[in-house]
Image 1 (tube, rainbow, N blue to C red):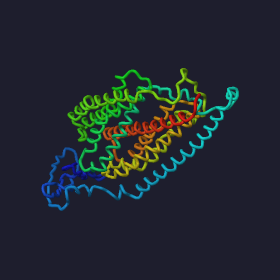
Image 2 (cartoon, rainbow, N blue to C red; image 1 turned 45 degrees about the vertical axis):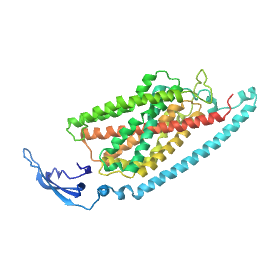
Image 3 (spheres, rainbow, N blue to C red; image 1 turned 120 degrees about the vertical axis):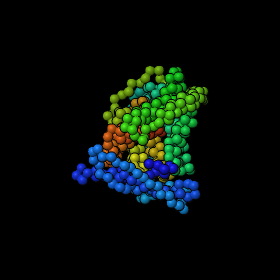
Amino acid sequence: MYMDDLPIWGIVGEGDENDGYYIWTHKRFDVGYNGNQIVDVNLTSEVKVKLSLSTKIVFTYEVIWKKSDTLFENRFDKYLDPTFFQHRIHWFSIFNSFMMVIFLVGLVSMILMRTLRKDYARYSKDEEMDDMERDLGDEYGWKQVHGDVFRPASQAMLFSALVGTGYQISVVASCVILFAIMGELYTERGSLLSTSIFVYAATSPVNGYFGGGLYSRMGGKVWIKQLLLSAFMLPAFVCGTAFFINFIAIYYHASRAIPFVTMVAVTFICFFVILPLTLVGVVLGRNLAGQPNYPCRINAVPRPIPEKKWFMEPAVIIILGGILPFGSIFIEMYFIFTSFWAYKIYYVYGFMLLVFIILAIVTVCVTIVCTYFLLNAEDYRWQWTSFMAAASTSGYVYLYSFYYFFFKTKMYGLFQTTFYFGYMALFSTVLGIMCGTFGYIGTNAFVRKIYSTVKID
């Protein structure tokens, strides 16, 4: 329960099949106040009554008011758990992830620069050969697909909508984390969610600009459909899942049910705030960033993709691509899950900012390596592969949520199971779109760099 936004926990009942079940029927609230403000609340459960059929149970409560010297701005300090969130394991995990970033960046730089230097030397030598020597030579690798590497991705409309949404999610995550660091959003109930909704609606032009610009560069023409998909894809998924869970909550008469007025308000925000702002972004993106500026021309006829080793297939690369990014955030996921599904208040947003930056760097490095292997196998389908390889991180997070549900929580029944896995699906999907966008952004810059450096006849 909550009193003046202060959380209260208390025992409801106890017992077993042999001794019987008991319920505590009297609640005593000890409320501390400083001036005219509540600064402390404690709940004590008393009067244990055995449960049996057809028994009338009377519930009572009492409130005891006590003066307190606690300042209003410090009233949340007792709910914070430094021994849990600032445990040595938490610090070690951050340090471990940071060292992994340094190692991975160094490894990627060393491998790619050495390999690309050899490639550049070989290609420069090839340019000095005549046509006969070049035809008889053993030319292979990423240069072979220069005429197809900038070919528009399949399902360009969906791809551009996902990338635009990923840009927006990244901006929202950065802003909310910074606001939480500066403003201590955990001290007000629902403030973090309200801030996230407001920032998401306000940053809708980001979605339209990057998504619309990418769709234009890929030669897209169906603008209205792309606009609607960009504006409503994520809100529709979030609202649809939340409303489904809400109907189950209403059926069970649960206190977690969202009021109907709130659902109507969110719908109005989608139609009258998000849609117009996304339209503004799409118009700007088409006019300012919509011209294709590829360093290589695109062949009229697509090049056939040769057979390759099984571990070079896009499906395998996608599955393996999310392992290292998930490893960089694995420990932080435990703390976030515990704060969301247990009685802990997450307040170490500085840790979250560091993990967010580490995740972005690791994701970019891993997808660049994956894309380089794919291009060396003369497979130019790098756009979707880079996005999905990074987005597969969310799949591992969702699998981890299964472990957490069965071994770390005591939830059961239809409502609790639906509530948990529904919102974990939302969290994983949003994380996947954001990571996929990180992977595409880094890989796009890498592909442009290597093909702009090599002289293509």
